[in-house]
Length: 133
Image (cartoon, rainbow, N blue to C red; front, side, top):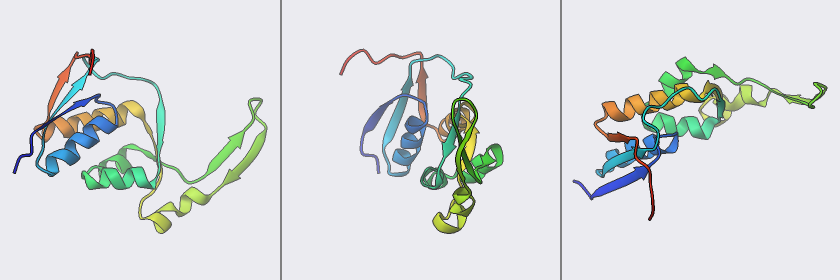
């Protein structure tokens, strides 16, 4: 059953995830992205267990675990490099929450989501800009 078309602005992290989840619920969806091609933004993200649970809902958690680095500890430092504190709590996330925490390059996550979204038959229109609502 189809419920209508949902227009989603942005093909960052949330846009493709939302599009894939809406497709599973029977909605037609089109994702619009301002840039013509997603490229390297040279930034990394920490994905905590709740984020990985969402990626698991769309069947991407295992692939992301292969591409990412496990987060097993936190260490905080001052701007001059002096240690402020540390914790090994992230090493317990799998047991406590059912998913691990990971660190992944934002570009890798974006392109993986975009690839899955397009492979799912979701329209992506690049080079579009939202001018008003």
